Length: 228
Image 1: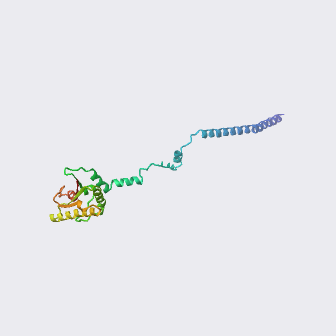
Image 2: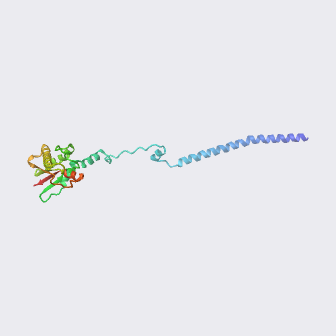
Image 3: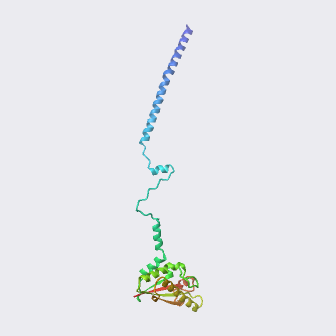
């Protein structure tokens, strides 16, 4: 009888265990499925509620440079070729000489006096030479154009040197240089009757000949325009 009770109890225990396995596990699977579905729905809702990134920010996050917008028609970029040409013209020797002539004050003798080398920032002649340097052509062309458009104006060209060397040689050199300028202007269409020349040598310094800077200032070509 004792053994029969034990077998009965064991049978009941096995039956309960089998039922627990059969009915408990589906419950856990259903809960897991419900939890996964809820998480997926939450993630989808979050994605739908997230703000959309701008093209620039999206490109920055992806290490890709944004495509620049197309330039508006009719607007000229600051670094355009046209602007560069305008700047070049403004800085040209022609513009410098023309501005000096047009904006110069007429003195009591009804004259306009300019220092060509000082305005153009370059020498008309090489050292000990009366041959006009090619770098000075543009500035002299502006002088010729001014004379041709002002037919009532005459010009006096004065050549000057520093004090180095013999006075007689400096006098001769200054005269030859003044004549070279006249010849150039005549070849550009200016009547030779409207141009006179004079060589002053080192007799009319405007700076100290004892310094290199002073001598450079004294080596000059002055142009005196007589207004009628």
